[in-house]
Amino acid sequence: MNKVNSTHCTDPRRSRATKYPKYAPLAAAALLLGVLLLPGLALAQPEQDTTRRERARAFLVLRIADALKLDEQEALKVSSIMRQSDERRRTLQQERQGIEQRLREALARQPADAGQLSKLLSDGNAIDQKLALVPEESFHELQKMLSVERQAKLFLFRRELQGEIRRALQGRRGAGRGTRGGGPAAEPPGAGE
Image 1 (cartoon, one colour):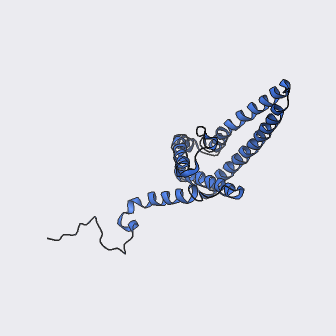
Image 2 (cartoon, rainbow, N blue to C red):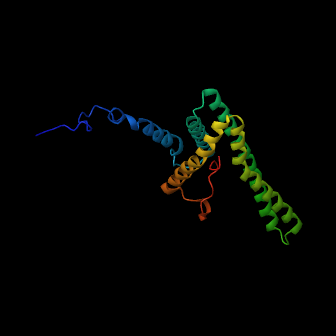
Image 3 (cartoon, helix red, strand yellow):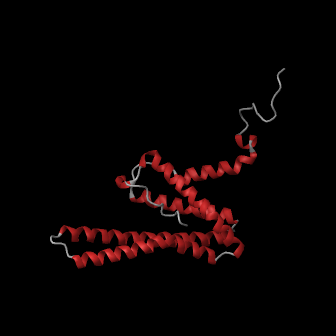
């Protein structure tokens, strides 16, 4: 007897989405994740870095908007908050790079000026503290625009989102990027958001 299993479609023209409709949102999310976070394992050029940041920000906005069921206007507000957060982070990172350069120059002079080194270290530590607070500040800005119920949902969703970001970054590192400097992997820039 040749029975056709009703859960298995033998028509090759029938798409997977029609065979497995309950998995369509998952497939769309996986495709979105692939399109936004995993493209271009080529050379890291400044314009590619900008595109990557924009894609990562778009991913965060879409995930937050979807999880909180935000309308278009609310999603635009989230996007604005995330953009401001990213700009603040980049500004602080540039300031830190400047301090690192001045530290290298100060250390190259013999004898090194202990007072100058101490001041640069203090400035660098202050910038590191500000950088660490950027995700928290953006999280609090998001909360201000939300109802208490949505704030609670965002609070619960945050850890899940952080895990997704970490897994995506680990997947990219595992694809040949590795960590910079051979040290342990750093916390991803958007992981605290």
